[in-house]
Image (cartoon, rainbow, N blue to C red):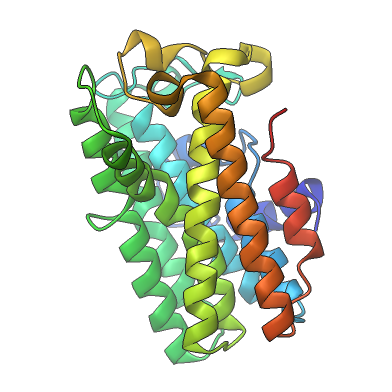
Length: 290
């Protein structure tokens, strides 16, 4: 599934979910503003392509799971952009949510997007045991065991000289957990063994680290038009990044190492399961930087 087709499919899911008569209009307007702002949709894309790699035919119920992880990711972007955190005026090439709707409304829209995914999952017509496992995994990935904890540590690390292991841990929580969920979720839906789920978790961790390293590199090498947000923000905030710690060449080498490790895990899975990894490998290829 390409990005355009995925966007169309997810838009249908979100439009239906936020069409109830009892919803507050200006809340849904704020939510839809950020949902419809574009983006790579890499988390739902990895989930759906991993399902297809296991031979699963994609249904509306699978799209609900993919939509759930995208909603939480969007929540994190709204909150990250607030003045109390990254204080960014642009996201995905458009004014950030709080610049359009005000800080209070942006906070509440982010709150809704952090909670609504669990209702979306609960309404998915999947085996009850799978739904419970998905809820558990998404909660672990997004809350105090994952993304939120990573954001706290990331803010704590500003102006601090962090070690490589400290930086790696921050991004394993902040970015890695939410990029691990799609692979694990696909394994749960496809009813794979615990051993395969563990390999998928390791795959997600490598992809998550690679994604964050790539983001650190782009912050110092890309333009606003390329990344849709203000470049150079990490340096202004005096954040510890892979580029600051390892240098640009070192960060690129670390990116390549993580992507190579991910490709190795996929190769092993293709030999021990029925997984056909071609489409996943294409997405991993997109994360490479020359």
